[in-house]
Amino acid sequence: MKYKIYTDGACSGNPGIGGWGAVILVPNAEPVYLHGGSNKTTNNQMELIAAIKVLQYFDESKIIKLHTDSQYVKNGIEIWIHNWKKNGWKTVAKKPVKNKELWEELDLQISKHKINWQWIKGHAGNKFNEIADSLARKYIENN
Image (cartoon, rainbow, N blue to C red; front, side, top):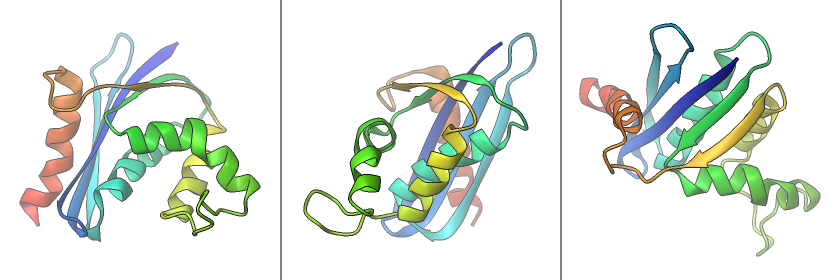
């Protein structure tokens, strides 16, 4: 059974108050909506946390098509992380990788699943991306 997931992060100020949201499309069932946030964060941290939290939702291994509008998350997990780990969590410029703890947690979470990462353009009318964005903004609006 394959799950489709949409994640998004949002921030008011960078750093500032931020939220994350996720939509899990469950075959033959109602969608699952997850969201949360932090009072002092960045947009990139919220994008990462959205992916982490949605993967933590599952108790067992799943086949997932994960849609994100964050090139940072998609490129980071598919391309950059391999060299970061080889280089002791340093960038090509020999600087420490930002959000290292979140990248390590995301790396741990993806090891439990078979994931096909998909980048989608944000704010372009994709129904479930818009819902994920709305869920991410909920935390900002309520705090």
